[in-house]
Image 1 (cartoon, rainbow over the protein chains, first blue to last red):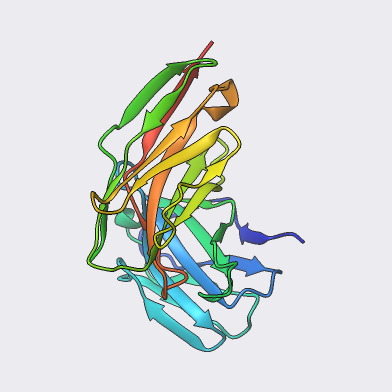
Image 2: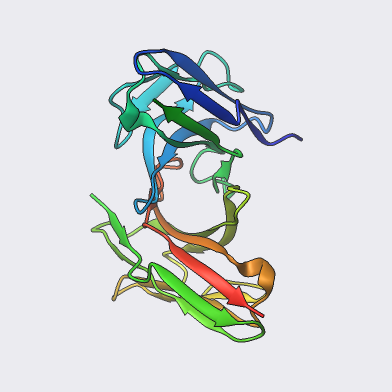
Length: 115
Length: 115
């Protein structure tokens, strides 16, 4: 198993540009999430999904869109990048609660810089 | 809303010694999980240890153990026989039991192990 994969590893954007951060998992996990990590603030939840076709907002959703058309993929879209979105982005996945195996597994992260 | 507080921004310890990282949390929930994640310079988020709130016994994983005080809402991590490879950022995290992909993180503690 490759686990949770994210592409790209690094990205530099100009203000106003759009892009999609890719996330994929091959563990057949129902749950997937996106977090951002900023200095001194730990990780904060952006959006999450409990299954294909179902998404919801987390703590800091503004400026980001998500969709979940398959169990494996959960892309994060920045429609018009802003310097405040400079951060490290992590994707995570897990089985559903109560399964006894609902620990979240994280991807390697994407470092995004918006100029 | 749940909050997680890590009051030690940085800690250092000599190789082979023991160190304890502190974490407190605030919640009105009764069923939840607590986690410690390690983030080395590679940026990968690695699960260190997990505690279910309904279990009175403290979780242990080799050199890592926790002191879980549910009434005090405290969840400290003890690292015994510290090794150079333990140098990393450590995050404490909370998750409500029925929300399998909504982790709430503390701000992190940087641990440096000195030779």
